[in-house]
Length: 384
Image (cartoon, rainbow, N blue to C red):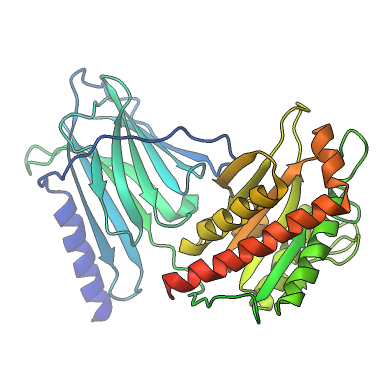
C-alpha cells in the first residue's frame, strides 16, 4: 500500500510539472567574475541535433517543486522551464564559486521569465537566468551543497499540442543527505582536530628553485600547529608525524589519500585541515589560498576563518577561498579545508617558508582561524 501511495504521489508530481504555470519575480543578474580555482567541472549534454531550432524561440515560464518520496524518504528538486519551441541543452557542475549547476540552453532567448527565482534552500538556494545573446541563454542553479554527476538529470520533453503542453527543459536535482549533523561549541578545549601535512615519504610534493620540498614545510608547520592546539586543550590527530607515506611505500594515490581521511573519519574529528604549498610556472606568482568542498554550511565558514587569519599573520597576497573537489576535503565527513600556505616556486616565498619564524606565523594563523571558526559556528547553532 505504501509503495502504491508513493507511486501515485510521484505521478501527481509529474503531472503537476508538465502543465504550464505562472512565472516568478525578477532581479537583475550581478554575478562577480569567477576565480581561476581548482573547479569541480563536468559536462553532460542532451542534444536534439535532428530538430530545427526556431529563430524567435524564448523561455516563457519557470516553475519548481521539492518532492519527497513517501517510502524512501528522499527528496528531489524539479525545475521545469517552458520554451516556445525546441532547444538543445548541455549542463555542467561548476565548483569555482560554491556549488553551481550550469545549464546552457541553445536556441532560446531568456524572454519574459524572471531573472532570478528564490528557492527554499533545502536543495538549491536560487535559479538565475542569463542572456547569452538573442538566441541562447544560460540557467545557473545555486546549490545548497556540492553534488556529483549522478545526483542530477537534465532532459527535455517535446511539445504536445493535444494536451496543451509546450516544449520543456526539466532539471531534477536529488537532495544529498549529510552524514553528520553539527552542534559546535566555542573554544579549542576538547576539540578533536585533524591536521594533514601534505605529501611525505616517497612524495616530496612541489620543489622550489632552491630545492626546498613541500613535504618538509607542511610537516614543520603542522608540528607547530599541533603544539599550539594541544597547549589550548585540543586533541590533535596528525595524519603523519614524520617524513613517511601515510598508507605505506608504493601505495596508489587513492590509497594514500584515503588513509589520510580514514583517521579523521574513524576518530570523529570536529574539523580537518590539510596543509600544502602551491607552485606555478611563473616565479612571480605568490600568495595564500584556501579550498573547501561544500558538504555543509560550515565548510565555507572554516575556509574563511583559516584564510583570513593566514593572510593576517603571514602577510602574503590574499588569493581568497575557492571551492574544489580535492579528495581529502571531499571524503572527510566533517568540515574540511585545504590550505595552500604560499608558493614554493616563488623564490621570496620559498625563502620565507623555509624559516621557523615564518612557519610559526602560519601556525598561529591556522590556530587563530580554528578558534574563530568554533566561536562563529557556535553562534550558528546545530544543524547542517
